[in-house]
Every structure is written in C-alpha cells, then in structure tokens.
Amino acid sequence: MPGGRRAAGAAPSPPRRLEPDSGEGTEEPGPAEEDGDEDLRDGGVPFFVNRGGLPVDEATWERMWKHVAKIHPDGERVALRIRGATDLPKIPIPSVPAFPPSTPVPERLEAVQRYIRELQYNHTGTQFFEIKKSRPLTGLMDLAKEMTKEALPIKCLEAVILGIYLTNSMPSLDRFPISFKTFFSGNYFRHIVLGVSYGGRYGALGMSRREDLMYKPPAFRTLSELVLDYEAAYGRCWHELKKVKLGQCVSHDPHSVEQIEWKHSVLDVERLGREDLRKELERHARALRLKIGKGAGPPSPTKDRKKDVSSPQRGQSSPHRRNSRSERRPSGDKKPAEPKAMPDLNGYQIRV
Image 1 (cartoon, rainbow, N blue to C red):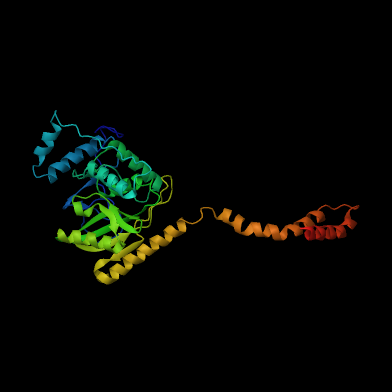
Image 2: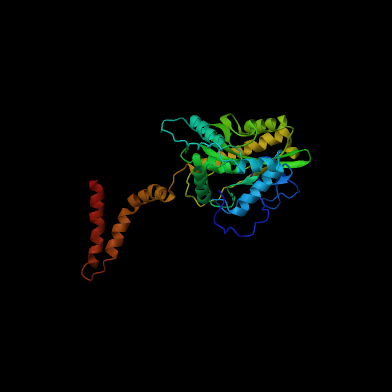
C-alpha cells in the first residue's frame, strides 16, 4: 500500500484532527461541541486520517504501523510479525450487492449490511478514507465508489456514506443520519449510523465493534423506539447516552450537489427527560415525513402552472385574443371592418 502521491522523501505529516462523528468509540477530550474543533482520541490514544488518498504514502504508512505498535497488546512484535511475513493469507474481496428489481427492500437492506460487515471494522487507528462532511453528495458518492473498489476496513462514518451509496437505487427508502454522544469512565464517545424508514417502520445501517450498535432491521414502529433501542444497547456496555443528533433525509440522486444535513435536530437527553425525548423524536419524524411529502409532489411546478392556470385562461380569453389580433393589423382599408368582427364572433358562439 505505501508509495503514493507524495514523494517518498516528504516530511511526515503531523497528527491530524478528525471529524467528531467519524468513529464509534472515539473519545472527545475537551468540552468543545463544534465539528472538527477538537482532537479526538480512540481509547485515550490519538488516531489518524489518511488524507493523502490511495495508495497510502510512505509517511502515513509508517505512522500507521507506529500507532499499531502503541495500541496493540503485543506492541511492536505484532507489527514486525505482520510486516515481515511472506505467507499472509489472501483476504477475499466482498462482492458489491446487486439486486433483481423484484427483491424486497428489507432483503436488500440485509444484503447491504452484510456487505458492510464483510469489509470489517478498522482497528488500525488510521482511517483510510477522509470524509469531509461539508462535501456535496456527489463527491461523497465518488468516495463511496472508491471504498467498494479498495475493499478496506472502515469505521462508522465511512459505513454511513457507503450505506447511502448502496441504497440510492431504493427510492421508497428514506435515509437520514443519527449521531450519538455517550459518556463512559470520564470520557465522551461518539458514534453514527444511517437511519432508514420504509413502509412506516424504522431501522438503521452501520458499522461498530459491537453488534447491537450497528444494524437494526426496519421493524421499529416509531423513531423513538429505534433511538431508545440504541440507548438500551449503550446501557449494556455501561455508556450513558448524552446527546442525539438527527439529520434530514438524504437525496437519492448520486449527482446532487446538496450537502447532507447532519444535525437538523440536536437533543440533550439528560435535560429533556424520557417523555420529552420521545416527543422531540416524534416531532423530528413528522418533519421528515413532511419534507418527504413535499419532495414527493409534482416535480415540475411550471408544468402544473401550465395545466392549472393557462388552460382555463386560454378558453376564457380566446375571444379577446382574436380582438387583439385584429387590432394589431392596422390597415386604413380594414379599420371599418372592426364592428363586423363582433357579429361574426357572436354568430360563431351561437352556432356552438
């Protein structure tokens, strides 16, 4: 993988900052809330983003292995053992799911999640794909296509982008990001999944080190039931849910230049209390349905205007237009003929 776009002799890049939602279990050491304003850590140790693209450049490659030596229980021995091996097993590349038109959406979602899971969770401490949340959707979809080509391990934010890409062909499925902020043992952690809504039921696609913090089939009757199921999963690993951020529905157009709205609603779980949290979640669900309803309306207002407005006017104003045409033909000889136009027109109307 080393040997990429930068010269081999280039100075190593300093540790980079991550998007706060870019990895499940990422620790936020400071109180800052704005995205990208703080250095994030994974288990108390900084982790990095490969910002040089693929193939990985030499500096990023060496930094990754140094980091592996720090965070792995076997330290440098595991890095030396892997890098020095000549008979490493060949890792199979998962096949991108393809669906016949008749495949039900729930079965498609299972196949998409199975593909995401087969890519495996990235434990190296270096995120291979740089996700800039401010990028337009078309740029993120190009990045998702690269993920399928490279088939490298991913973290939860990469899984969300990949989930959007793999479900663009399902127009009846609504997708929106759901982010969680939790507290455990003096540290804050963040995680993100792709919420889905189909047939009035809610579920999610995602990637996590814990099975119950990723995929949820579209079987939850309400959005609040889905979020509270994640809260219960966090409780089983002694995490306290602090905040939930919900985005708006993502366009199915892979060429859209719109940005994903990552946090349309930010809910402080502790301040709201259980009942108010339910109300706010259902309020957001109604807002999603309202936006979907507007989006599902007639695609071209201009066409509607022509149908609803122009047609009646054409019938009502037809006589006036004929008068206007006769007035626009100034001719010295035919000016006296203007009174004749009305009897002819009236006669025509009587005939009809």
